[in-house]
Image 1 (tube, one colour):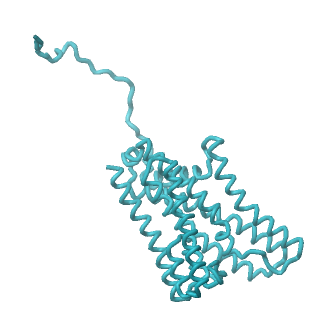
Image 2: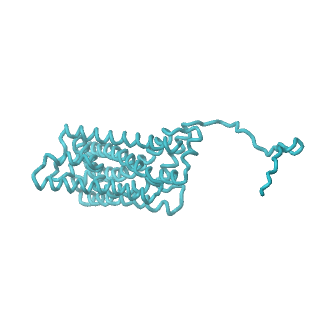
Length: 302
C-alpha cells in the first residue's frame, strides 16, 4: 500500500536569494518602427540569399541572371544592327518572362513565411513591440521589393542599351516609365498571392508547389480558353476570360492604359471600360491578399 508523506515547506534557513549578475536594460529603446525596418531588411536580403548559406543564394541569383541575360542580348543586337527600335517593348518583357518570375515567387514566398510557421517563431515576434500589421507589412513589402528588383533590372538594361543605340530619348524614357509602372503592379500582385498561399502551410515544398500551380496553371488555362474563343470567333469574351489569371490581369491593365501590345489571341486587349475592371481586379486582389494575411497571422500569433 502506498504511503503518503506530507510535504513541508523549506524553512527560512534553507532559502537563499542569489545575485547572478542580471541587470536591467537602460539603453535606447528603438520601438516598433525600428523592428519593422529590421524585419523588412532581413526579409529582403533573405529573398536573394544574402546573409544565408551559399546554397540559398544559388536559385535567386540564377533567376536574376536569367531575367537579365535576354535583355542584354536584345541590347547587343539593337546596337550591332543599328535598329530603329528594341526587339521587345518594356511592358512586354515581364509577360514574356512570366515563367521565371513565377518560379522566383514560388521559391521565395515560402522561404519568407513558411519557416516562421514551421518553427513557431511568429509568437516570438509578437512578444516584442511589433504587431501583426507590422509583421505582415514588412513581409509583403520585402517580397514585393525583391520582385521589383527582379523585374525592373532587365528594363534598366534595355533602357541603357536603347540610349547607347541612340534611339529616341523621349520615346524610350516614356516606355521605360510605363514598364516600371507595369512591373510595380505585377510585383505587388504576385507578392500578395505568393505570401497568402505560402502562409497556409508550414511545409516549404507544399508551398512551392501550390504557388507554381496557382500562377502557371491558371495562366495556361486562361490562355487555352482565350485561344478557343478566338478560334470560334467569340472575340468579345477574350478580355473577360483574362480576368482569371494574375499574368493576364497585368497584361490587360498595361494594354488598356500603358500603351502595351496585348498578348491575348489576335492582340485583342480590353477596351478602356474593360481596362477599368482589370485595374479594380488587380487592386482588389492586392487588398484581399493583405487582408487574408492579417487574418491568418492574428490567429497564428494568439
